[in-house]
Amino acid sequence: MERSLNFLEEIIESDLKNGKYTSIVTRFPPEPNGYLHIGHASSICLNFGLTQRYPGYTNLRFDDTNPVTEDTEYVESIKEDVRWLGFEWKHERYASDYFDQLYDYAHALIDKDLAYVDDLTADEIAAQKGTPTEPGVNSPYRSRSIAENKDLFVRMKNGEFPDGAKTLRAKIDMSHSNMLMRDPILYRIKHAAHHRTGSRWCIYPMYDFAHGQSDSIEQITHSICTLEFVPHRELYDWLIQQLAIYPSHQYEFARRNINYTVTSKRKLLQLVTEKKVSGWDDPRMPTISGLRRRGYTPESIREFCERIGVAKRENMVDVGLLEFCVREHLNKISLRRMVVFDPLKVVITNYEGEEFLSSENNPEDPTTGTRPIPFSKEIYIERDDFMENPPKKYFRLAPGQLVRLKSAYIIKCDEVIKDPDGNVTELHCTYIPNSKSGSDTSGINVKGTLHWVSAAQAVQVEVRLYDRLFSVEDPTDESQDFMHYLNPSSLTVLPTVMAEPSLLEASPAERFQFIRKGYFVLDKESTAQRLVFNKTVGLKDGWTPEKGK
Ligand code: ATP
Ligand code: MG
Image (cartoon, rainbow, N blue to C red; front, side, top):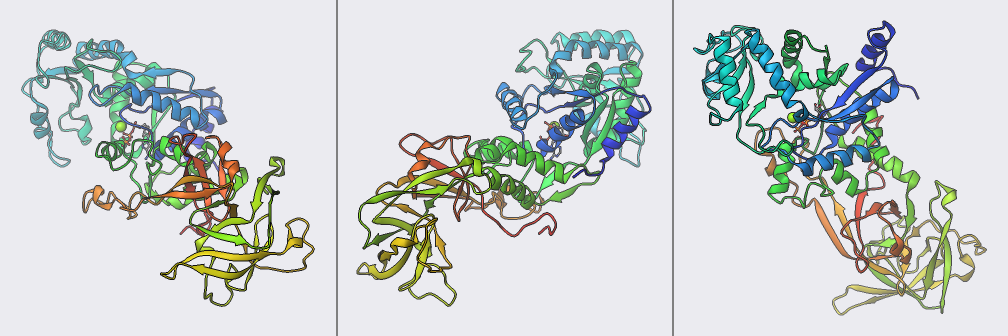
């Protein structure tokens, strides 16, 4: 189904039609100070999606102008995540590649008397900025000569001054209606090692002086960022114009926020460093790596981003839509398996020996064929699939009642065995020999079908169930610290789950539907001795994109 164009596609179509461009260039510009999250996925799908739809290409540019918080570990994870989502960049670039060029641009501004070295501290500068209704105050250093500015700027670069002693500021207008145009800082002194340039630099460009210039150097046609940068656009344009460099244009779209989660690298980092989660790829994290480990597919994340589309106003997206998208995809691709979470032993008193029955791997995809499942005298069923005193219309197992075992026989419960405390420990049942699935001639109709595993061949595995990491819709409502909203029971570990033996061959790339339980994937902590499965999502929760919640 072809959807209508979003506002960026409209702009690009008109730019291509009226000949402004024959092809377009976009970029995805993460700062390598954390792992990518689901909000970034929407920016990735947007930027790369546009150059799949229209002629052109997309660069991956690391916005690495802040040496203190950045790291190569983050660079590597970002590349892995973008590729996993299914996109390939044309050029891998770093803002730090442009440090020499940016330094020259700064000199060009000084030469035009459009930048000056200021001795005020960052705090003093902020205090003199004025307010939206009151003009700011000119710095006493604003009238330094071009020659003096050039000399001081070179000495800043050469490391003659300590951190914070001086800045380079643009000379624009201290009474400008846009506060960001009131002589913004372009460079600061920071004696810190950079993950790529080492100790070569001790002055670093500010975001506003790096971003637009990097766009321009790469001849980005459509530079897409989130709405908080709207006020920065005027400075973006001013710098490009004064430097007379390639005219990239900035367009803004609404940041994507998802309920019951946080999408801020800083907050996610805090969860990691305070060990509230096991790491950036904890399956409860809204990071791309967390979603991957949880069993999400790239297709489902791309589908989610496509469905939420591009907006000009911020809103909260329901996490139910993300879950809907992955459930839809997993239903199509996952292999059906039988796994019993809370085993109750059933002895089939009139069955002897063992046999292999056949069960479909995926009714949605007949090409996946069938697999053999062992059946024998002792099996496990789910403890909550039995009730001693069932209500009316209870179609599972109860004394005297019949159920079908999935892909096997109809059984009848004859006897309930209990321990001295009255707990049910075992059920004794009989099976109906001519009721085998696929060749049932018993003529008996039963309403309930249960999953089960054969006790002798069952493999004990660990299953990890996840709930939302935060217990409220908006953990960043700021009425209290977001950490207070952590859901204390977001992880449940089931250590003694009984699985059918075919799961011994599970591979990390496979997706499973544990019948009647949900969708699962093998976790990276699995060993040959102990398999661990993560629950990706449940089978259904009634949420549909039409209804919303
Ligand atoms: P964070 O607050 O999580 O650090 P950020 O915007 O500072 O996010 P960057 O690494 O600078 O992170 O972001 C790279 C790109 O991803 C930017 O273009 C940014 O606008 C976009 N982006 C980040 N978060 C979101 C989001 N929640 N929704 C849409 N786009 C986002
Ligand atoms: Mg940022």
